[in-house]
Length: 75
Image: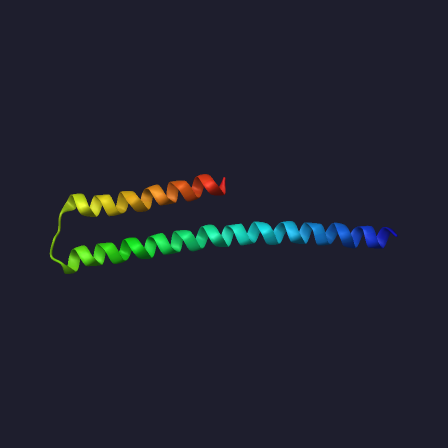
């Protein structure tokens, strides 16, 4: 009987770990997507020869805000 209880406890811990890692992956994926979008936006600005520093700063501020939200969510 104790063996069954231990197996059930281990399964519960494993399920909790799986949930944690799924959430970590989702946060990482969101960060990856946001970073790629920022890179694409910056490339468009560069390719268009429109080098407004305010546009660059806006894009980087958007990424920073996304990172702040992800950090808050992770905590």
